[in-house]
Figure 1 (cartoon, rainbow, N blue to C red):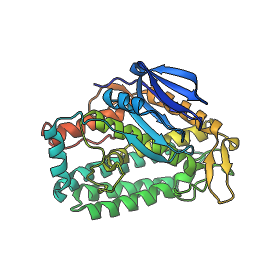
Figure 2 (cartoon, rainbow, N blue to C red; figure 1 turned 135 degrees about the horizontal axis):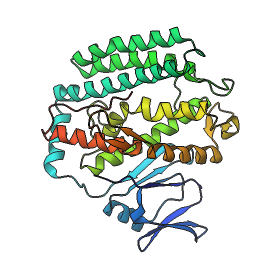
Figure 3 (cartoon, rainbow, N blue to C red; figure 1 turned 90 degrees about the vertical axis):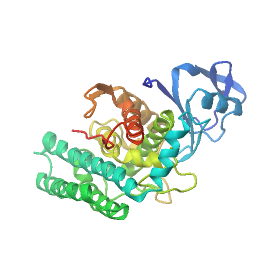
Length: 343
């Protein structure tokens, strides 16, 4: 099993990464400003346009260290992928499964079931902890609407039907997302999802969290030998890690959305952490991203009991465990893929 090691985040826009022996070196103006042993790293995510040396890219690929490039504002650009580390039979099974609409639908049903289940329990957790402060009836109505969708998801006969049910559930969930924000609603409000660009502080954090989670899911899938670009729910598109997007669907409500809500409700972010552009876009400042990433890393170290395995694990291991379970299903060791069901 892959150990939960560190993720190195490069936030300064002028840092160039290079390799020196067994170390990754951060350079500014051709001068080394920091170095980190490669063996302590699981992932490197750089938000710098300066880039990285081919030698470092090759070393990361050889050692199965995820290396991802994002814009300074957090938009994903690319990942370095080395030689596939899974056996050819597994990937051929994955590709055949992706070409079979019935099998795609079977896997997608469990993933969408997990997403809606976790979205409902996110609402229920807010009702349980803060019911006296909120419009509990509104939250209960959304929770029940999602609950009624779950049997329909189990019986959905096509990916198109699944996407329709997922859309209804997402509308109900995000329809009460603003109710789960407990503090400073002059700054932190949610009136609907906006992506490119995010138009408010909450959407800015959601987009950033989703980018980080997508990278973790892609790294997890590649680490068990799967092709992160060939999905079952999200169809093939050049440059899109479709299977990573599939895997993260069930993890969005519990790993990304709840994380953003916790940052807001515990006053770990404030209005000064955001830039408000003339175009209407809202972006995290450098200090805001640093605080966000620090808390993201701390969250990944917190432990929980995995609902399927019954083992106590760090949150950061969950994408890797789910990728491993998906692999076991594709190999025929499991009758169905067990989604991550959080309470």
